Image 1 (tube, rainbow, N blue to C red):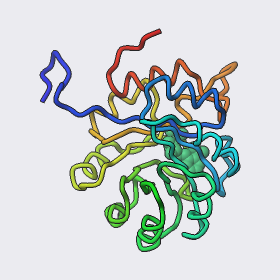
Image 2: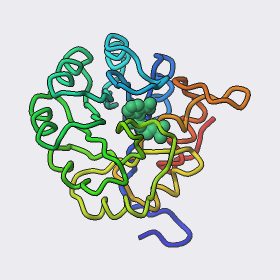
Image 3: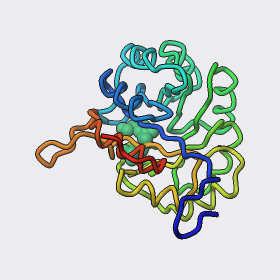
Image 4: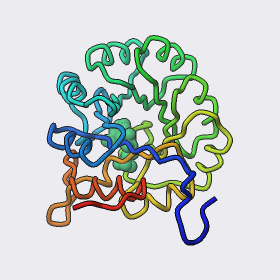
Length: 231
Ligand SMILES: O=C(O)c1ccccc1N[C@@H]1O[C@H](COP(=O)(O)O)[C@@H](O)[C@H]1O
């Protein structure tokens, strides 16, 4: 346990995913910032500036270098739909939001070449049922359709209990920013954190959805992993 003066050097480093990448330059900035994973969103029935078509998803994911995980984020109606998209985009991992059942997610996981990250609503009562088929559980502040990208935080104390209760790696998502991610990590102690809107460009006070700000990405990774920000 860390004392009041220094970091807990025994704590394993928090893994960082930056999601909703739509441009090659942003993918390069995320990798350069030291993120462990890059998320690309495709095949979602919600209105979001961060979605790209299957071909663009494949191109963006193909450019993710070794030692960095390329994650396809999608909301399939069926297992087959997810398998088809993953076959086209060839991600290292697939993150699934939406309404598939634990049984369907198990079937999907057996058909994927890579890992399956299951996104669940932080407020749901049956989180644990989804841990079984998941290689990692992403606990997010989702909208009514189960989609993420809300930019909203949730009750981190509750998610900390989920982390303590489950063996599967838990990834914390929802409303994270460079300013709150250190507190989120301290509270929840997740395996990893995931961010989409909190690192997007702001122009004239307005967030430019789908476009990352490279300095904000660097600050987020540093804050999440307690590295010094190098200009
Ligand atoms: O980002 C989106 O628009 C999105 C749409 C549909 C499914 C998932 C989506 N994003 C995921 O939500 C988390 C949290 O987003 P935020 O940081 O609160 O904006 C994001 O990391 C993606 O995995």
